[in-house]
Length: 108
Image 1 (tube, helix red, strand yellow):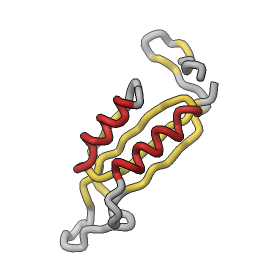
Image 2 (cartoon, one colour; image 1 turned 90 degrees about the horizontal axis):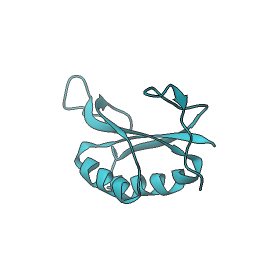
Image 3 (cartoon, rainbow, N blue to C red; image 1 turned 45 degrees about the vertical axis):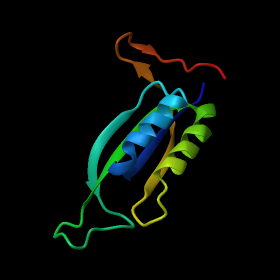
């Protein structure tokens, strides 16, 4: 089974809508972290330029990636600088700490 990690950096203001859509898609787990940074959009009115954002990380089977990425793009899109980014990364293996066993993704 092939695994992927989807990482999205997005506006904190859209986080609740993103979480709800991911629940509707059946995403079984995710991690959300409050982050600060700048990229295309920097807050030049502050001395450190950093903007508050949210980082969402999801491990899922490769066949589930397109639906999750499309949901993230649909919900997080405002159409202005600072909307964020989505990255899809390959994952070689995934282990469950509780059982010390390799985690098997559900078959499509």
